[in-house]
Structures are given as C-alpha cells and as structure tokens.
Length: 581
Image: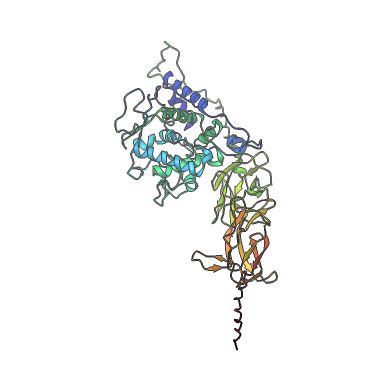
C-alpha cells in the first residue's frame, strides 16, 4: 500500500534525485494553469478535485489504491531520443528501461489518438499511459501479451480484504478477478472490477471490454484520466487525474518521473522482452520493536535447584486489576448514513444537445435526518440514452459537503430524446438508491423568419429564381439541428398537400410537394430549387418545426406569355384592264 512506499523508495540519493528532478522538469514543461474561460469564469478543468467535490480517494480510484511498482527510471534518459522502431535496444545510459514492448506501445499510441478525437480538450499524451502502465504492471509484465494484446496470464493485485489494503467486497461475482468474496485489481492497468464495470472500453474493436487486454485497458485508463474535463496540458489537471487513479503522493511522483523519462525518449522492443520492475509499495517486512538491554550487562541466570520461596500463609492474594474494556470505535460517516434525500428537483428536463439547467444533487442523512458530511455518493446515468455528465462519463463519484450534499456534475443531453434515470447511491453501504427522472426533448424552434424579402415569383412551366431560405430560433438564439417540414399547401385554411402549382424534385426528378428537412449549425434552412407547373396562380409554402414554429410563404406563378400572331397580308385584286372596244 502507499503507506509503506517510503520503505521501498529509499534506495539512495541517486533515485531520490531522479524523482525530484523529473517532477520539477515536468511541472516546468506544463502549460500554466488556465484559470478563466473567455467569459472570465473559472473552468472545471483547472479546479482541484477537492473544490469540485470530486472524490480522488479510495473508492474513486481506478485501482482501489492497490500496490504498485516503485522502481524509478535511471538518472539519465536516452539521448538522442530514438524515434524508429527497433528490435535492438540502443546503447547508452537508461536505454534498456526506455524500451516499451511493441504491442503495449501500439496500444498506448492508439488510445492517445482515440482520446484526441473523443476528448480533445484533455490533451492526453501516450507517455502518461506508458508511465502508469510501467508503475502498475511493468508494461504488462514486460509485454507478456498475445498478438491481440491480451495478457498471456492474468495480472491480479492482492486480495482487497482490508488486511493491509483497502476493504472492497466482491462486486463482479469473480467474473474478472476470480474472487467472489473480495475484489482484486485486474490487468495491465490494474482496474478494480467495480470501476471497470463503468469505465471499461473496447480498444481493439473486437466487441469485448476486457481489463486483461492492453488495448481495452489503455483506452479505459485514458477515458478515466480525462473525465470531469481534466486537462493533461495543465499541472493541476494532470496531478488531479493521476491522484484519482491511485491516491498517493508517492504514486504521483513515481508516475511523473516515468512520464518525464519517456517524453525524453523511448523506443519499441519485441513483446516479452521488457524489463519488469522488482520493488513494490507493499514489499516490506514489519518488525516488532524490542527492548534493548544495557550494553555489557549479562543476563542473570536462575539458580538451579533453588526452591521457590513460599508465600506467607494467611495473607490474602491481591486481586488483579480487571482489564479495561476495549472501546468501541466511533462509526465512520458512511456507517451513520441511513438514507439519501433529494436536495434538488426530482425531475429534470433539457432539449437535445443542451446542458441541463438543474443539477442533480443528493443529501446524505442519518435516521434522525441529520446531514452527514464526507460521504461518497455515486451518480449513474441509467437507461437507453446518450446523455452523459460533463467530461463524457456516465458515472461520477462525489463527496458530500458540510451540509451533507453531493452535487453531481452538469448533465449534458444527447441527441436521443426520451426518458432516463440518474441514480444516486451511497458507496460502502447497501441502501435504497435515490432515482431522479430525466427527460430529453427533441430540438425545437419557436420562431421562423425569411432571411430575405425578395418576391417569390415564377412563370408557369419555369423555376423560381430566388431561393427560399429561413432562419429558425429558440428564445432568440439560433436553433440548430431542428427537424422541419416544408409543404406546398392548398390554402391558408387547408393544410393538406396541394396537387398542383409549385413543386420540388426528388432524387429521380419527380415532383414532390412535401419535404422533411433540418436546420444547420446556424439555424438556417435552405430549401431546394422550386419549380412551377403550367397552372398559374397564388400558392402557399408552409414551413413547420418541432416546437411549434410556423412560417407561411407566398408564391406567385404567372401565366406564360403568349405571342400574338401577325396576320398575313391580304393580297389586292388586280385591276381589270379596260378593253379597247
């Protein structure tokens, strides 16, 4: 456990210097913490976990604070930094330790690329995953993995039964760790089953989430580190994320040392040839203090054959002092919790794509209704929904404040409309869950307006020269991705589709008079080209959206001009020639 780290870390001044210099160098290389966004608000990415109520403690950690390797990198990093894959370890101080098994290295780099797409604001470097992988499992025990990245044999941490380690009862019925009584950290990134249940990822697209697979485990570790919007490009974000993985300052310093080492240079080596660390944070032998004897004073041997002096008869024996009863330890805050009460709205609603205005919160209380502080409450998004907490996770563990309240992170509605549940539970207790009803409504607009005012006219049999473009808004703001329908209606009082007059064309070129559309990112709706048949007259185009916005546009079709034929000239009769009679 981390409490015994110091007994293994003191290997001499050289390695201690390595840790100190590496941490200092890393801190210097980090971008300064950004403390405000463009509106001057402080961002969650740069706010310490304690301020956000995020639990970086035992239950909130990925590993359950299991033991880890304490070996530090060599004093000198490889120079120059190798960039090409090679089966031969380059010469030079520290070159051997800089080698990372090929499959393991590939998994780290692919996880970095996937996180850059999924959570670009996290700025996760693959070297951080390599540093954690080194400290947790020695890069999957030197790269002892199959071609698909699965460990040849399971990597299991000690039984978390409270004997020198955390006490975590079984949560997976032994499915991952083979233990149906207590949990154990599993795999190359050492996830405990209860964390893997929500943090697990499929990193190699085989349809499974396996903590024993380095591709799955590396991607899961990346998402875990990037939750709550933490930014690895800032000192605060990186330190908070690492401590949430294993809550120990010694662990933090060891990981940062390897991170700095790998940033200076690393190279690929064949699977199964990596160096495996030897020192662990739980590798110690407890000793009992002995009472020293005075130097030079020999012990006095008993005299053989000397009978024991009899006690004086009749003298009563002095009764022994009764042992003091062992005091019953005071219950922990978690043990005093009787139930959870809703500390905010029990029902919350947001439009698709929006952040919920109301935050889910729960209050931990005793049986007498007294608030309980410092209790871990887990909030879980449950149901068929793509809604998630800020940072892209569906689970968040929050510590109750002095008023007993745990405030969940802001909830982001997805694109899927419908109902789902946010469930609050007390970690460490089997109590009834507290459910919050959440709803996602479709994207909507409450107003539509044309972007231009040119008259929409066309000659029968032709096409309209001016395109129809409208803008949708909701409460004055552009309404993006809103479903809309454009219909050529018969009249203002008859919304049925017209069977004559202007029309659109489908993909085959056939006339259609109803279209399903969607506004763009700016709330604009650009209708396709409009055509006119041979029927002149006044027509109406009606546009409706989700949310009830309606706009009716007038269209005019004029009769085609008909040319007046020029009459043929009338030939005059020739005059009769008088006879000469």
